[in-house]
Picture 1 (spheres, one colour):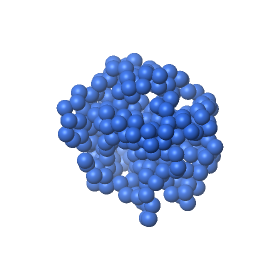
Picture 2: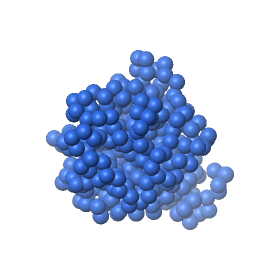
Picture 3: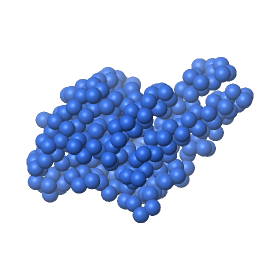
Length: 318
């Protein structure tokens, strides 16, 4: 299995999850969490990749047996990218009664042939990049995606002894959601509020709107979560909670200023994109994301920033 270069904070286990939370991910590239909601109930957060979906399902079954829980009742989707919910069709086939909770716009994505083709292409690349053994022979499927509960901003869902509040946090995608688990006040953060890769390195993928990313970070900061769980990273040390979202906003603001500044100073789009790649692609990132997926997002981010903020006219044909 490909070894990740993401590092924890000093003397911290980034997957040291709170009691009743379990990482059941079957392979690298995306995460799946199982959350216990009382004596018998449990729910899922994301699914991880399709290529390792069968292993993830086995991990879920093993953990529910250990906990003495019934099958998971709900699947909460952070957003509709292949690395987060790629295995969802396998999950709903395994547990037909599973209720899929996602933003309303997720349903539109799942009906888009273009979006499904992108999921298949990137899912295949991820399989070839980090799969092993029989995983390498699995065809990446995209049939069977669905949304059972369209979660609007502020909606809450009661499962067992927990209430899960759905917060719309767009910016990374239009369908990005952060889930607040009460009463413990754990925040399952979307990628709209960044991914730490080390105590010094924060990364982002602003694919829809820079201002929405800032607003989503401010919104999550106001929730004052006791535990912050980040996509692809894990648990943020509690002493970093107060500064985490400011760190993210500072990071993306610096990247915006760098990208726009280069273009306004006369650099071509290709030169600005190459600078973005040089500045953001690293040995750490290489262990957790295929380059083609990163490069696709990089181009989207750079074009978005230039269209929105450059003083010099950005020609769309670029």
